[in-house]
Image (cartoon, rainbow, N blue to C red; front, side, top):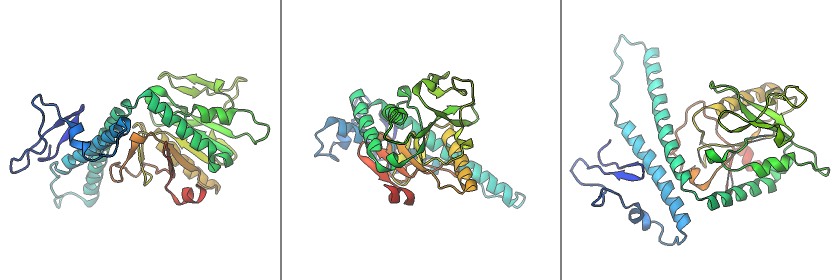
Length: 323
């Protein structure tokens, strides 16, 4: 651990000393930190305990990741390449080290976000779920969409609920043109995920992880339409994730399924001359990070907009025009 930098572990603060021996954070006599006292002065006007707890958890996430970044920065650096090492080999080694550092930072951030999500009470989750779905259903960009991809939320994974959105899309309405809906089906452990068309919630079955997915064939035994083979473009994709920020950065659960799929679809849209779909992520308040906290690499696809209980955050030029 770098000197002078505290690190959060399981809700406790491990103290460190500066190079001059000064204690940075003083624990209690039992070794437990007093985070409420440490942060209470930052929000003197917040009387709502739930809001204060959310801010505290977000502060813990930011500090934990920042501390990890400092530790990675102080790791021993590789010695300069000698004349016998080719520039290509040296560049490859540097790239590998960078990718590993990003992976370590993402792993730490996911752990802290999962911990923060566990602190959300059922009532608060339900309140944010309703606010987010209502915002989307009432938006002009959602109403204007004709074909969309959306995830089927899983409560055990603490994803923002999408049940009302899916029900609205699948509900017959003679006064409006029906929307085509595609939902994800994971094919294997090699980041292969398909988006298959469904027409009713009965088209979904539980997989080995107890997550609802579309069956590969319909009731008539015909293969379901894959969005990558569909004749028309998708207007909108509603995405889950673990952490987001207001610059468009997103990290998922670590499998890489969504980024792999999005890269495939964006390439397909280019080949077909289609407009790129609007990528909109759904987020609880504790999942939104400050700028610079989320590490990314070249395979991470940025989002166009973010929807939280506070409303819509347009990010890309396309989102600013549409929202």
